[in-house]
Length: 118
Image 1 (cartoon, rainbow, N blue to C red):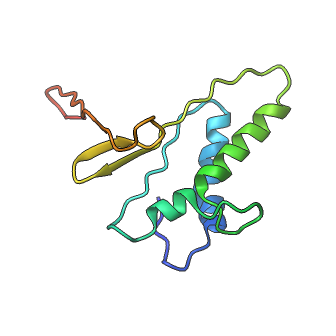
Image 2 (image 1 turned 90 degrees about the horizontal axis):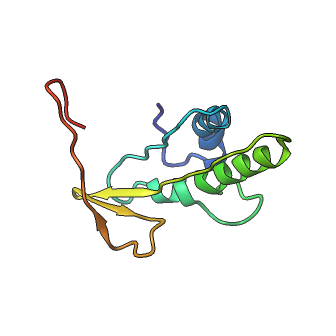
Image 3 (image 1 turned 90 degrees about the vertical axis):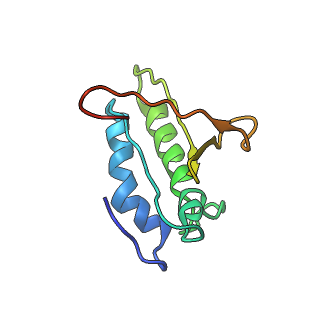
């Protein structure tokens, strides 16, 4: 977990917080990058960034995809199943940002037992 100041470079955020997660994904684990903050604080910019090759401000999503696909292409004899979700939770509405209709909201499914709710 980390908090970064407004003048942070996305390359550094990726190296510090996301790169280790992607490495664990390549070892077969699941990972989540959760960007949280008030409207306008840079969550989308951090995730998407500036889409220019070599830019220090390329987002963590394109950096992650590049990392995963480069690693999987050189792993001879290893098969990968790659899945990704890109969700936005805003004012208690959930949207799938990789879906065909990014304005459509998703239903929130609550699972509960005697100890907790998810």
